[in-house]
Image (cartoon, rainbow over all chains, first blue to last red):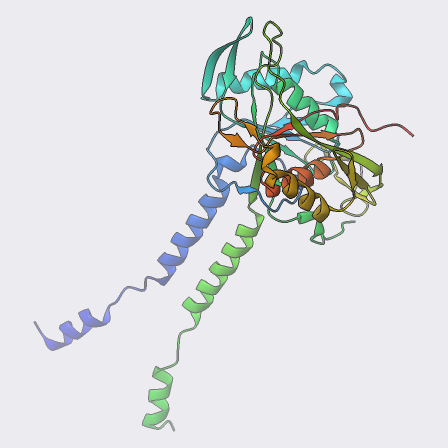
Length: 173
Length: 185
């Protein structure tokens, strides 16, 4: 082999930088876009709490109830209950709890409590409400959770590690 | 005319492109990370035996923490000039409330300051004479706490209270009251 050919082979080095760039960009894109666990979280400003457990490893699917400021109850983008539409008819909230029991794999223990046989759910239901949601809306959700038909007895109240309302937001218009 | 030294300097010019690429990638990464929702949770419990009255339940002493709103506060749009329904999301534009005030009542004592509430609750939690036997394990532990938000309370008020109760060392938190809507003026 001639010296010239050897030199040419040594000088041909592939530049990996654009490929690494593309790989990183694709990774960021997929991590942010295909994050299914964020799908059922409404855009709410949660209250700040200091001694909370970090919600760092949430399961992909879990019962989540989003309570908006006007009392609307939303799961995966669908409005299940609206005070303006349903008023004091809380059956849609119970329907949502039943939907959780049917569609999500939950730890359900059949227990005889008094004269009633109850399917007690040992997995928690996460309640996410805006910090300025009137408490009685959240209280009504809890009331429905504690009914024997639903029997969700473990709750988790969603909090934020910092109060995002304190962060100035750009004003529109 | 270029000297050999000039030519050598030209050859050693650093290529800044990959560094700029990486810096941009890092900027994009950290910007996007901020948009992800980092949340936390506080556990609480509801009564398991609701709706059954055919057996007697042993009464258990609970520490009652009342949340009593004293000033409703003034509502204003969270983002200026944004009220009504957001046509993109079909959700109402959120509001913020300024000047909302409330106080707590722990037993006969009324408390207006969060730090004082924590101190009072810690004192009770550390007083072993108030501890009760766990129904299942029989081990002594601080008594259960029942938080009773009165009409006009917000989720934020309850969150602060639950936080203080947890910080004081209480394990079991239940909820009562609060099902009335905001009193109309």
